[in-house]
Amino acid sequence: MFTLTQITVDGLRIDSTAEVDKASLKAIESAAGIYAIGEVFNNNADYVCGYQGSISGLMNYPLYYNITSAFSSTSGDIKQLENGINTMKSTCADTSILGSFLENHDNPRFPSLTADMALAKNAIAFQMLADGIPVIYQGQEQHFSGSSTPKNREALCTSGYNTAATLYKHIAKLNAIRKLAIEKDQGYLTYNAYPVWTDEHTIVMRKGGNDTQVIGIFNNLGSSGNANLTLLATSSGFDADMEVVDLLACEKFTTDEKGDLNVSVKGGVPMVLYSGLQIEGSGLCES
Figure (cartoon, rainbow, N blue to C red):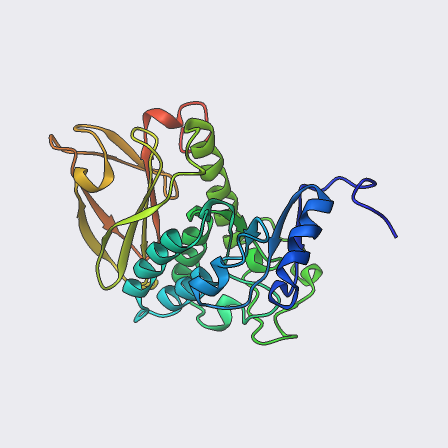
């Protein structure tokens, strides 16, 4: 046996939190003296958020169901995702300390629902840039496709720990984007992301203050899908004649005299727009 004084950890995950008495949860976290995140396996925001008074963090199961529903097919429910985001913000005391996830050991892996890589990229990008703490389940970066337990608990060694895998590189870049946003904006982590525009297949999210905001354009068009949209300055907060970079594709754009921006979604992949001035020295899209 060992105690937390003998090892260095910055947080605990408490499994099956709903099966533990709420007073005991509070006592466990207090005794540990570190952040704790609990698993309340339920899609009801009121029920899940109701545990936040007893434990600091919670796995964001309601958002997990919304992300999965929105991006697992080209007919996914974007409106439900929009509503779910707003519901969690109004129901939970603090969404910034929830765990944002797409896969875990209890649910079918996302690629078991669809093999479309563009849909996977959108779902992961949304998860990584949502409010809260991103949680990646081992093998997610390798596009493992196990369905129900135990098929979703594949041995990671079978992948050869491939750091050239498409989703490994995708997650690494998203992590770098998130790190940059945190460095540039002291309030980024506590800024509640919100939808600024949606249609049947697309949701545009904003997170962060003016000049350092991250604008994510996520869609469920699939790998064969393309679309054009105009992002209004009133939604994005971008200034007139401003250089903006899609940090995933390293493609540069310039807003018009009003700050509006015309963008094209190609091959159904997500876009993450950020100020060109803010990326200097970051190593992102500078070459």
